[in-house]
Image 1 (cartoon, rainbow, N blue to C red):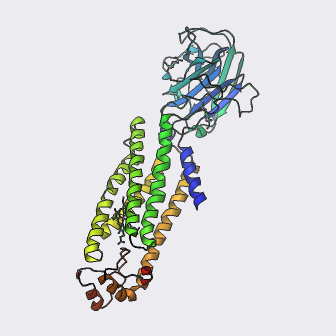
Image 2 (image 1 turned 90 degrees about the vertical axis):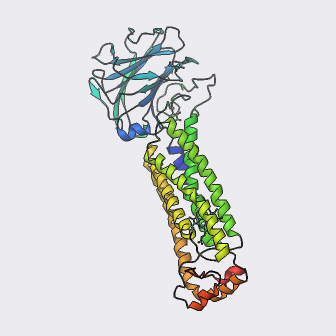
Image 3 (image 1 turned 60 degrees about the vertical axis):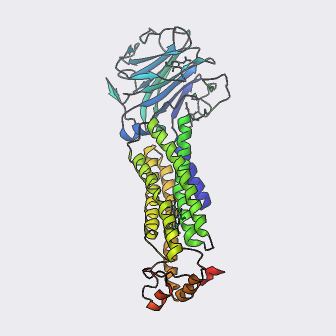
Length: 445
Ligand code: HEM
Ligand SMILES: *[C@@H]1O[C@H](CO)[C@@H](O)[C@H](O)[C@H]1NC(C)=O
Ligand SMILES: *[C@@H]1O[C@H](CO)[C@@H](O)[C@H](O)[C@H]1NC(C)=O
């Protein structure tokens, strides 16, 4: 079970991060594509890609389509200052120099530049699912792309329609965009440059960090947003799938004086962690404009609804001390708690869907969450059934109650409604208590 849990949480943590597919044809030239979760689920919207290669290249190009004619091409070359690249969107018009296309909505993003003998362009394209002459399914498992580059002197132009000479190398490839899905609609390529290290290409590695002098960084660090998403995606499921059910089972399974305070402390601590996870969630939602999604709304409702639990819990406890039985706060506390925590568990699934998760991550979550939830329900039913069979011990218990020996404060289910009035009377102080408390005498070791 433990291994299963950790596995689930791990799968959860890694799969919410931005994914990318990379292709490196050689000579240190690499291309990486990311389709953010929101785009992957709706089929249109922003995509991100990265074009990188040695600054000894005159220009490097990537195009959507299977041939030059009609393809949506992006070229990068050194700008006039030689510090950054010029991003030039073009339309393939045949086997000749493509002409600049001003209708393509592309933006050069941070992390782009020329340093460490590398030129890098991190690009967002907002309308790359169709262009004049073609279209591309942004969820295709075999999307067609062309690539080309030319080794040679720098173009050194700020113009998007600079004249360039013909490629020295070119080719086509297909990319599985389903493996590129994920992430939160913000530049996923700020620190990492796609590298050839694990590709079949034999070219030299182009791995380097475009923002610093370090050349040892292979994978790149996740952005701050990715780190917060990761923390949220670990903390929130742990609290709802593990900690809340465990805290509920504590009060059903354990019996010692003061178990109520273990439950109360455990639950309140968990709630504080939940507040932290919710804070992160709100920040993420604001950053990525997802506050109006089901997951965000239900999350806020769940966390707000849970605020009643400490109140009803304490109320139950105080009234219980007075009357020794179920009271006006008992069943609201129990059933509201069960219902809201269950909704929170389900909402974790919505969160996974939102992050454009791999089905693997979703399945892992579903398995761990349902195993835990079923275990919780089994414990409830089990203690319900046990309550029944201890009905005949009510009399003994009633005496202990009167002597102030009540210790575990766990309401039993209506085990002894059918019991004679003598027992009910023995509760004395609480004539209105509908269900006398059945209690196993073993609990008073
Ligand atoms: C965020 C905080 C809390 C949550 C989410 C919570 C949740 C729950 C849940 C779900 C149950 C039912 C257990 C089951 O499934 O059978 C329960 C039972 C109980 N809780 Fe809490 N609880 C919280 C805080 C507290 C506090 C602060 C107290 C008291 C000081 C308290 C006292 C109790 C007691 C005495 C029971 C057993 C009731 C009975 O069966 O008679 N809880 N709680
Ligand atoms: C290159 O230009 C982009 C877009 O303006 C910018 O975000 C990036 O920081 C620039 N890079 C350098 C090294 O100046
Ligand atoms: C693409 O993803 C892999 C792992 O999924 C990562 O190691 C690599 O750095 C990413 N590439 C870019 C350019 O972000």
